[in-house]
Length: 145
Image (cartoon, rainbow, N blue to C red; front, side, top):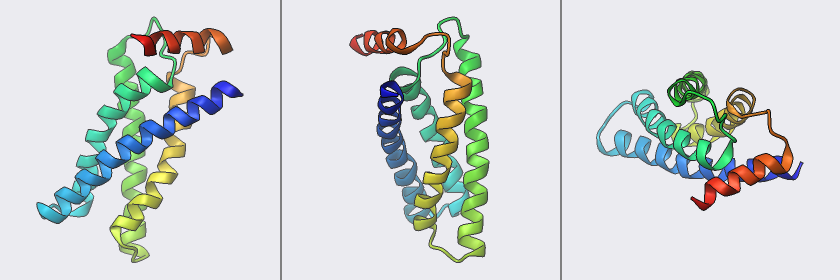
C-alpha cells in the first residue's frame, strides 16, 4: 500500500509538471497565436505526452526490464491518444454543448483523464513481476543515477 501511495504521489508531481506544459502551451497557442482551441488542445496534449512518458517511466512506474523501449513508447502513445480522444470529446461537450469556458473545461477534463491515464499505465506498462521492496529498490537505484 505504501508503494502505491508513493507512486500516486509521484504520478501527481509528474502530472502537475505535464499539466503546466499542456495548459500553458494551449493558452499560448489559443490566446497569442489564434489557433482554434481544439487544435491547440491536441498540440499541447501531444507535447506533454512525450514529457510525461520520459518522466513517468523514470520516476513513477517500474518499467519492464526486457521491454522494447520503442514498443513501450508506442503503447504509451496509444494509451495517450485514447486519453486525447477522451480529452477532445469532453472538451467539446463541456465547451460546445454545456457552454463552459474552455479554460475551466480543460481543468475538469484533465482530472478525469488523469485517472484513466494512471490506471491504464499501471496495468499495461508496469513490471508486475517484482513485488514491494524489490521494485522500490530498483526505482531508488534508478533515481540515484
